[in-house]
Length: 346
Image 1 (cartoon, rainbow, N blue to C red):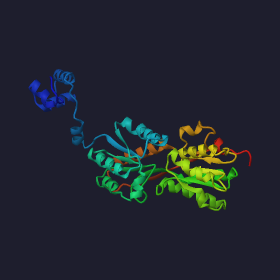
Image 2 (cartoon, helix red, strand yellow):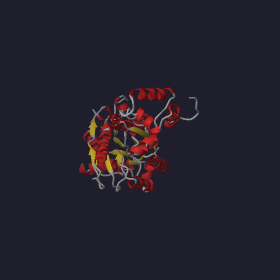
Image 3 (cartoon, rainbow, N blue to C red):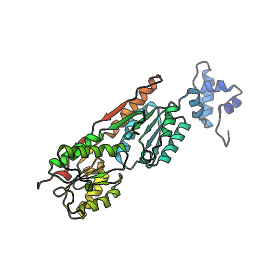
Image 4 (tube, rainbow, N blue to C red):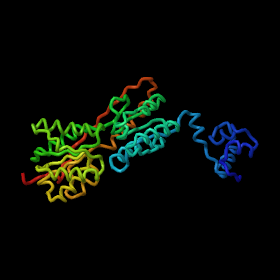
């Protein structure tokens, strides 16, 4: 059958002079249809390239088998680990995931939410963009709830918005990283702080300042500079830090990329890592174990974020209650000590 459009059940029914319902039953192996008829219809359907209309089936079954995943970037191993965690649980169950990258843009994030809802996804996993925090707009998040589509924050949340979330104990990780630098003999510890407003940024900053307070080290605003999460964002701030009359002897970067950028500048300026400047990052990205010196960092269980978020989603599907409990899971982080902080000339 030569045609420029997809073959339909009605086309097959006309060919065999039977009803579309007979064709549909035969293609679904219904026992009321004669076995020879079933085989003939199925062979013909395969020959002419008939494909089931998944959109029609989803409308009939009220299921699409699709999910939305929105992350700010795929440049870091952490986000890919989260997606791997989601896939490891949900893909074997037949779910297809639409991976969307917001590039830290509120407008792009909102557009993705609108399109995912229009395509009747069964759930949305969202790591909130920086601009969403900055803008203060969350109407697109409310639209998810209004449509009664499960919304689960992964890694980054929108504070104050009532939805399930799986995050990391960023506060503890930052506290442990700063405490480690102090125990290595550092007294002037700089912090390359992430973008304002983000929960991960503020929690890591709070862990840093609380640790300084615990050890009675005065907070020095000159040693706190803002970056974003890219390696290049650390270059100029670190140059300024190292040009201070009293440069830092320890640096805590908001993530590994920033810490690696800082390490590059520190060594370019002629300082030795770690004996003159000890450096610690956050994330335990794969490269941190292979640069020289290897980077002390805080490990985040990215894949576990995905598996826990999957568990919450599946639990919501089973529970038909109107008011589901809001789950807030905070996973532990852990310090990984490597060469960049192991000072010998204390």
